[in-house]
Amino acid sequence: EVQLVESGGGLVQPGGSLRLSCAASGFTFSSYSMNWVRQAPGKGLEWVSYISSSGTTIYYADSVKGRFTISRDNAKNSLYLRMNSLRAEDTAVYFCARVRAGVFEAFDIWGQGTMVTVSS
Amino acid sequence: DIQMTQSPSSLSASVGDRVTITCRASQTISSYLNWYQQKPGKAPKLLIYAASSLQSGVPSRFSGSGSGTDFTLTISSLQPEDFATYYCQQSYSTPPAFGGGTKVEIK
Image (cartoon, rainbow over all chains, first blue to last red; front, top):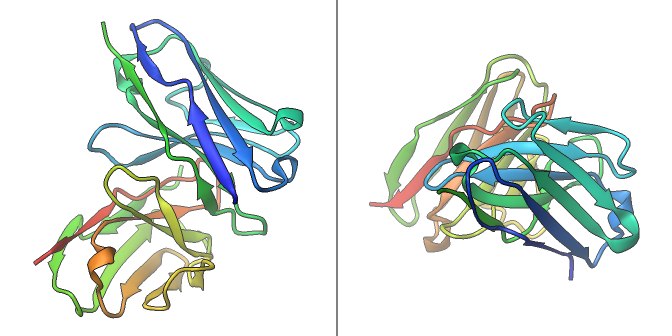
């Protein structure tokens, strides 16, 4: 079964750090680009970051640039998001999502999400 | 950055109704438009990619159309399991922005 499972969320104080993980199974992880997408409580979806299959191309939303770092370990079938200098507005469910193979880069597989709460 | 605007933000409909949701891009995105369904507490699910291509396993009552800046998601006959929030997303350029969502509720 094709699956993504996030972990690492939790409660952190403003200014703190957290590392999220996304474990992939059921497909050749190293062949797919990946993304992180977040959703604040009661709000819509917000794209956070992208990494290509090899890890050589990376993009960030302006709202997290300089604070978040995306990475991957293809040998471990895992995607990561290192989050530093966390703010209250970073509170959200964080999803990892696979980019569908082909030209039109839709997100075809999503994890169940992990909740990050930034609060003192 | 490209902005995506969905309308309406919510709608009430009955089982069996035909439902149409629109999405407009702030600049042309060709056919780089995707639609997702999200139920409460769940991850989004890809329904339509490339504006009109049905994702594998998605019922044929869902269809998408449009190109350029104006797009439509249609549910031909609303089923009980279709009550959810729907999002459009452009994949033409980075950042791949989502629309604000359309919540489909039971009338």
